[in-house]
Amino acid sequence: MKKPRNQYSALFKFQVALAAVKADQTINGLASAHGVHPNQVSQWKRQLVEEGATVFERGTERLQREQRAYFKQRTFVILRIAKSLKIRVDRSSGCIKALSRRQDNDTRSRSAIRA
Image (cartoon, rainbow, N blue to C red; front, side):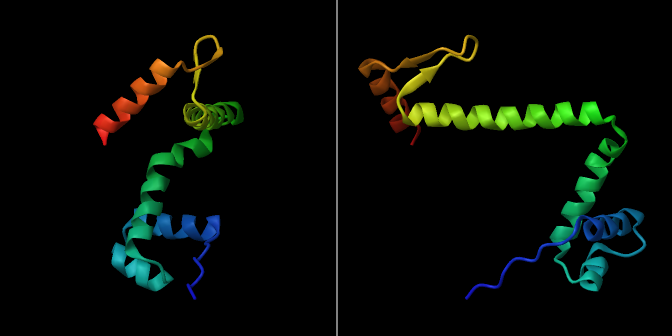
């Protein structure tokens, strides 16, 4: 039976990442002190450094950025589903068209070439 993954609170992650940024101890020392893997400490530190400025963004700016990321991901999923259903979605107009047999064969041959 597999060991369940550890889930750490946001406060714990912040404290460990902040200690890593302060550089009072090595990453390995922090990891062993807190009982996490050194790669995890490095990842939390990188996230804090890269995304720390978002704490001071206005709520609307943060919300807009999160919405753009969400819709980009959803668009990718929709286009992948459309491809599996053999339909084509025109991104500019939003029109949906069925692929002709020729287009379907072209996409198959392209994917065979890539593989």
